[in-house]
Length: 314
Image 1 (cartoon, rainbow, N blue to C red):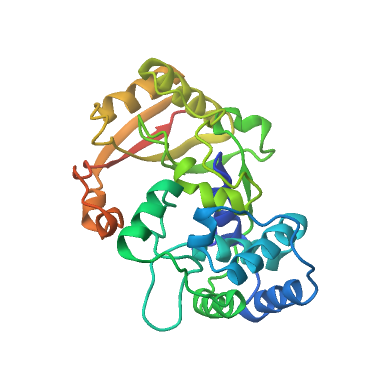
Image 2: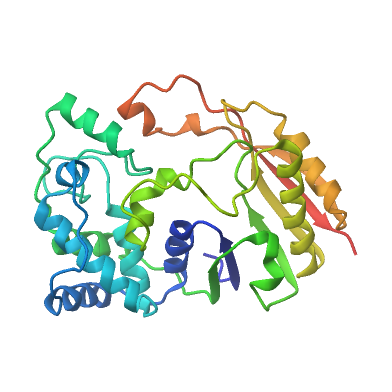
């Protein structure tokens, strides 16, 4: 928004794909034209997932068109319109039903995370929602593109990489960064890959929940701190003296650890001249409308989060 040249790194392919679209300079009609061209020139997709979940989650015509886009965007996602189209589809791949024209492609589901197949089927059975609505994929893309791209900020240059920030020097060639703004996984957060299993499928992954996450931070406390320390140490190597580091961090109700102590220990272990300047309260996720509460009663409230500010000493 400020026009700053930026580089983004995330090990989650979904996060990297969505972030990449924020750096593209295009418009709604160009994206719509690309979507129309894909559908007009497409043959039958090579792979369409089968099974009770897929039959109940998507109307068969809707699923067919989704698979067309999945296969085509894997081939040509490097065009500006393809990058934005891919991100738009990721955003509307699943979500809640609504009156009037649908906003999302799927049967009733949260939009932030994808319900696991067995739980989704149980929910649809209980609510009498086993027949998914027919959603016109192209029409839904058109409406979302015109809404999302109605006002576009001035383009900023930069790159987004899908990679591990513990090895940042192997990923980027730029140096002399002045700001690092980040939010690492909280200790005990193991589900962000399985929770995005449908979006990962659209990006070329398996049509099932994959629980293993190679390369994910260990959730042994000492190893977790060591992994974060590697990030801070490698970031210091590509930053200018005086660079500012801002970290949003917290803890999970299921793992109520001292989050500040973990972060402070990781910065100390990095031994990379990061000096903590201040810590500010950032509230908690309870301030917003948590989608989990729309589908089941959450047993525990989200814990407070904080922003830690540090500076790279010369």
